[in-house]
Structure formats: structure tokens, C-alpha cells
Amino acid sequence: MKTTRWLRSIPGVLPVAWLVAMTAVSAQGDRITIQLMPKSNQVVRYHTVQEVRFALPFPVGAPDPSPSPRAAAIFVATESVHTLAVNAPDAQGHAEARFMFDQLAMQMSLNGQPMPLPLATDAIVRQPFTAVLDRNGRMIDVKGTDENAGVMAMIKPLLTSALSGPSSMTLALGETTTVPLSAELALPLPGASASPMVLTGEMKYRLVSVEGGNAGRIAHLTTTTMGQVVAQEIQTPAGTMSMAMTMTGDGTLDVNADRGIVTLRKQRQAIDIQIQPGAGAGVPIPPMKMSGTITLTVSAE
Image (cartoon, rainbow, N blue to C red; front, side, top):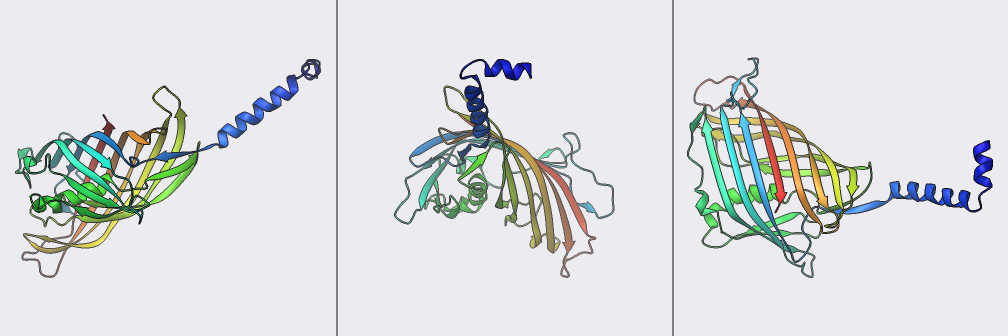
């Protein structure tokens, strides 16, 4: 009571205190637009580091040799620098995103022994590729040139992964939104066909905090991923097999909300693959499974 009387005795204190309190409540509910794709006529250079670790297929029911840095049977490491430039949209709302690798290094190993790369990296570096995006930022086509037509099958999954997800979202602090997930993944199985796996699912984004600075406001988000591949047919030296996959993961995302640029993305996914031999398999093979992890770090330069 004494405190209340003291506040009332000072002209203007209660109105000011009420205004401050209401401003704080309003700020907590403020929603900001977070741009996940570069804006029109914007050029961004990204540095990407990705590691894929998988145990070789093992029979269902056997102990799970989940891969570790020491025991990984299949290992793929990729480090790249690429430039992404987005043009202004046309009358239909379609925009072209020009994609080019400035640097690309890749290594693959099987049980610690180097494996040949599916495609020489110098066939990809400095080759221009163009993704056509609809008005919602979804990729609807990929174009290359006559010189790089042979690498389009490999580049398309990379572009799909790089350009997957919404182009923007609007969130308040603590708010979560869920968006559909669709991407293509290369199959980490020696001797299997090069056709990518089509992954579908959902990805959740949660806005954790927003920090101000001279270079712009930085929005910090967390991400949660759930995806699956259902009964996809694959070709291997042993015959046709059916494969199903589940993927779960989490990560963090930093976005310059004023410039509309993702400055840092970190993700880690755990993947489990079930392989069921088909009736036409050349030799009797029991049902198999694979376990693996994919870690990804992307930073804007």
C-alpha cells in the first residue's frame, strides 16, 4: 500500500508505468517477416560444409552399428562455395535463381578406403545453372547449358535441397510454424542406381530471439525436421529392392531480417533405411537396414 500511495503521489508516474508495461506486451506480440531466400536482384555467396556417415547395410535384427567418426563404413565429405543470384520476377511471378559453384571439394571412402567420385568436381565448378522459382519460392524447373547437360542429374538434387523450404515466414517471438518438406537425396549405397530418393515430410521453425545491430536485426530460430521415403524401388547389382526411410533432425538458423539473408544454418539429421529385397533378386538376401547421420553447416560470406 505504501508503494502504491508513493507512486500516486508523483504526477505522471502511473500513466508512464502503464505505457511502459503495454509497450512491453506489444513488443512481445510483434511479428516480423523472415526472408529465407535472397530477394530479387540480390547476390549472396555461401560456404557449405556437409558430412554424410553411414554404416554398411546389415541384417534386420543384428546389432545396430550406428556410424561414428571411427567406425563409419561409408563417408562422404563435401565443402563448397557457391553464389546464388535471384532475378526480378516476371509477369507470372516466376523468378530465376542463378546458381554457380565457385569452389567444390569432395571425398568419399568405403571402410576407410578412398572411392572414386561419381563426377569430377571440375565438371561442376564455374558451370552456371538456373532454377526457376514460382511466386512462393518453390523450384519448378532447372536449366543448364549444352556444355553441362551431362551433370544436370547430379545438380538437380543439390539445387532442390538448397532451395527447398518457404521463401519467407512471419513469426512472433516464441511462435512456431510448420511447413511441408520436399527434397531429393542421393542414395549412399555402393552400386545402387543414381536415381535420388524423394523425401517428403515437414519442417518446424521456431523464432527464439531477435538481436539488433549495425548490420541489421538477426533473427535466431530453431528447426525440427521429420521426413520419410515410402517403399521406393532401387536398382542394385543384386537386383531390384524396395527401400523405405525415416529422417529426424534439428538445427539452428540465423537470418538477417533487414537484409533478407540467411547468415548461418546448422542442421543434423539421423537417418534409418529399411531395404527389402525384391522377388527378382539374383541371390537370396535377407532384409537389411542402414543407419546414418548428415551434418550441414551453411554460412553467408
